[in-house]
Length: 208
Image (cartoon, rainbow, N blue to C red):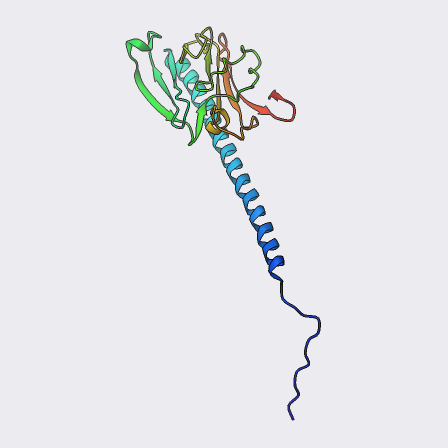
C-alpha cells in the first residue's frame, strides 16, 4: 500500500509586496553600482590622460636636449571632448612661422583641458582664470591666450606653466553632479624644465 506524503506545514510563497520590495532593493543596488562604474571609468581615463601628457612633455624636453634644438608643445583646448596637444620641432621658437615633425595626441574620451569651478591653483602658479573652457595656464599670459611652450637645449622652458585636466562633466557650466576629486594637472618650471604630475585630494583639499 502506497503512503501519501505528509504535507509540509508552515510553507508559503512570497507575497506581492515582498517581491516588489526585493526588486526595488536590487534596482537601487544596480543603480549605485552603475554610477560607481561610471565614476571609476572617468578616474581611469583622466589618470591615463594626465600620465600620457606628462610623459610626452618629458619626452619633448629630453628630445630638445638630445637634438640640441627647441621642442614645441602646443595645446588645443576646446572645452568639450576632443581636446588635443601636439609635440613638434621648431628651431626659431615661433609657431606662427611653421614647425616640423609634429605629432598630435588626443586626450581620452570625455577628458578635457579644464578645471573644477572653485579649484585652487597648483602650488607655484597663479590662480586659474576660472575659464573652464581652457585649463591651459602658461605664464605670463592671462585668460588662456598662450597655448604653447618651448623646451630648450639646456632643458629649461621659455615659460613656466600648468595644464589642468578633468572629465568634461566636472567643468561644464551647465552640468550637475560635479566632482573635484577627478581633477589632475601637469606643470613645469621655467628655468629647470622640471615636470610634475598633480592630483587633487578631496580629503585634504590640496594638491599632491
